[in-house]
Image (cartoon, rainbow, N blue to C red):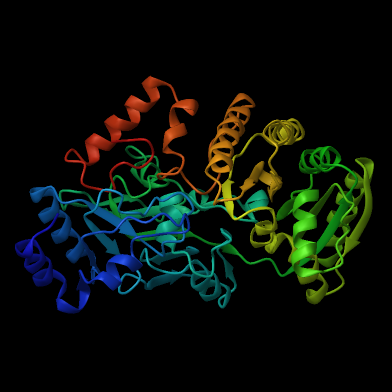
Length: 461
């Protein structure tokens, strides 16, 4: 707990308009997309890096917990103040695009910049920032970096870590560091910037991020394949990627998801289909896009695709993408509680992975609709139950544990984009050895010996 002396000190740093301990603010900053609630003791809105350094220096001295927060859109509780303390909120002041460097094709931003705002700003000058998490309209770049966010374009363009060139950050003792450069190559010293990516705010507070940009492709085309079985669709995914064609996106919906979208939105989807694959290709020449789509259609039809639809214009493209973009909310037809996981495996084992998931669903007599970014092996697996029934909730968590084990057995990982946070922390020892967990703890202790920065996340104390 913080006392009046602490509150006065923080007020002196940030000003009375940037510190709140009233119930409305404490409640507003007590939750994220997990819908779990943990009230902080206060919420601070730092104006700049100097404020953050002073706040952390004081908190380190007085053992006050600090939890950095972007938009609070995370699915694993990474920004929840589960041990109380102070939420350090970036959206009010630390939200500026500081520079778009056309010559070197980089952008320098503060952590509170909204992902889509950055995309639009760089596209106005003919450049492109590809990482596009589903929350891109409101999630922040700082949060994206802290969770190493992905998105639909990851199949071709990669994820957040592939675009972070450098970071400025404040350590828990108040020291300011800069890791990385805006150079294409940089092999001097340890890759501290890489360690900060996906660290979920447990090691340092990001204050500035340098991001790689690329030229924006001039055109995009969209297509959808309809498959009789999930296995056929999964075979088509990895065979397409091995054919020499790299689509921008390769997104998947299984039959349960198709039926949920159709029941909710009545868009005329083929409810008897085993699976749908929605794909985008891009480039600078229309002939090239047509060639890519022809190759994808060939591979799809060699693997059980009964119908291949190519969008003729942007409206048709939006219609083809509608089912994928609205898959998650539609799943509420199967239950009021969703355990939404983002497991990821090597693409070639996707057919086996989905077979295992459906066997788990049958074993526990629950619905497990699946959809997601199969172009990069990332499947959103949703165990759906009645949240008002404690027995069903218990069964759901048993099923999720088996989902994780099946994923790990196939060489996969607990998370492809959502991170670990609180939600997946109990499963970390399924995926990592004692030696590996001890190494994580040693890294945490080296950065934050007093454990004031976002404690209890990622399975760490």
